[in-house]
Amino acid sequence: MRTNDTTIFIAGAGHSGSTLLGLLLGSHPDAFYIGEGAKTRFLGDARKPEHKRVCKLCGPDCEVWGDFAVAPSPDLYEQVSRRTGRRRIIDSTKNLEWLAQQVSSVRRHGGQPALIFLVRDGRAVINSRVRKYPDRAPEELIRSWMERMVQTEMFFQAFVGPKCRVRYEQLATDPEGTLSTACAALGIPYESGMLDFTRGPHHVLGGNNGTQWQVARTMSSSFVKLGARTRPYYADHPKGIVLDLRWVDELSAEVLALFETIAGAQNADLAWQPEREAS
Image (cartoon, rainbow, N blue to C red; front, side, top):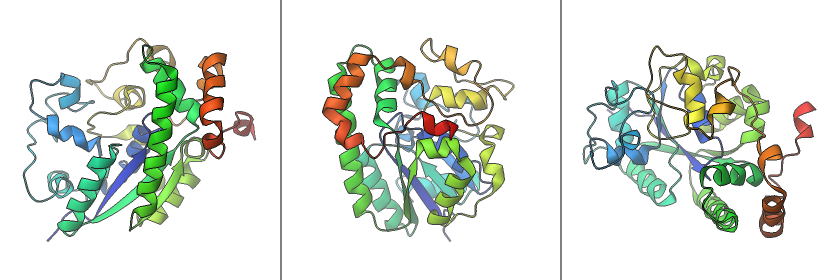
């Protein structure tokens, strides 16, 4: 008998809010958020930096990942379901090759994959990337985002099974409506308690430190740390879900103009006007 009922994959570009969405879905009493499932390849590998091979919240002594070893069979998500007792597993790995392999593996072992295409205003994504990778050319970052969005759209269109799109800005401004709609599309019974994602417990591989910090600061001790780039924003971050519009103040006029020239047309349907937040 299979323990894992559904595996939900969150696809899209990095820095689009997948850690937040994963934690929200993983707050369902019958769900578990892996984080970036591809990082299970690094578990126990001392050659990798510690933050890439241990639970981001618990560290090396995590009750889920501390001694977890991926077996050749069954699929990863069935193994995690047996470990955690949760029937629904969420993976926010963005690599499309990994996703294709895992979707195939889940189906081959009799499971049901589901897919979320998470989207966000490209200007916000590029702002995060410029902040994280200051030594990389903005044009390279913009074109990389464009390519990932095109490839993910093709993957989404070809995917057969439960699927939906989720927009980060709508999730942040109407979390209950957006999350309940997504749950309905994926065949998950929505529960209002999912909105309090800081309750935990969560055991996450990879992902955004800032979002995880909101969970970590409710714990007596945690492994996750804030870097110098994000500490001022997240250290005093209010509890709960807040729309992140830092790009409005942080993205330079030069990079914004470059983005509009290169990617403005592709971003037209994703562009979020800050005044919408007030309305």
